Image 1 (cartoon, rainbow, N blue to C red):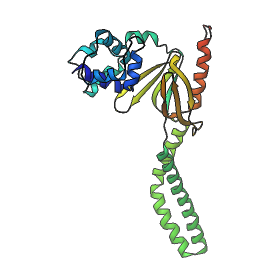
Image 2 (cartoon, rainbow, N blue to C red; image 1 turned 60 degrees about the horizontal axis):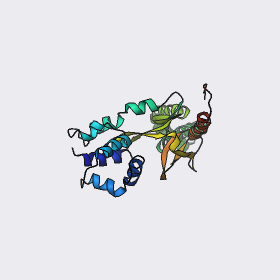
Image 3 (cartoon, rainbow, N blue to C red; image 1 turned 90 degrees about the horizontal axis):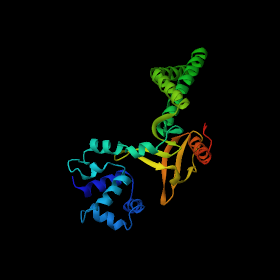
Image 4 (cartoon, rainbow, N blue to C red; image 1 turned 90 degrees about the vertical axis):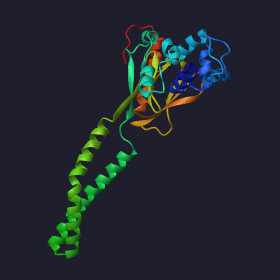
Length: 265
């Protein structure tokens, strides 16, 4: 596989625009513009050796991945493996002794709708019992018949309703879904599962702010992460207990400023 194709695939997998990618490379190499990145990806000319080293650093892949033509990143499994390889340098940098795991909220709108439906079914069962009892005791045939019909129908689905309500109660009590990342004293690490499974490492010093979205509740909501040098913020969707994440981040800033050797959150 050609180097030009690898650069394009890896850049997109890392969530970088051509302009952002060129800017990241410009930290150590002058003159890497969006047009230069575009020319590399279109195969108009190949980057120099020094550029390739910087490309490997920014895309967080090994030098061999870029230069070995037998590595085919069109293969999803190979791409996933490459994206999850953490370089030895990054392993030394990342310190996860102080960390907060980030989870998506387990329950969605459909779960709340189902909960309402099952509650309605149980309510119908209760009303049916009342109608049946009143109709039977007062010899009111219509009430007796209506109560019996609805009672039988709702009684059939009652076991299923109870099972779903128990599941909802457990999920509401512990609403942590899949883990989507973590924040520690050196990095914010985000796992993405859209076009390709990927892990993004954002140094804490490059984060300008971490805040909750306007419509966020105590239990669920979006987190907005603003980065230095990037106009468009990153948005983590449907995070469980988002205010706790923001609180942890604020505490983390204070800890990083402190020279205390004992750091407990």
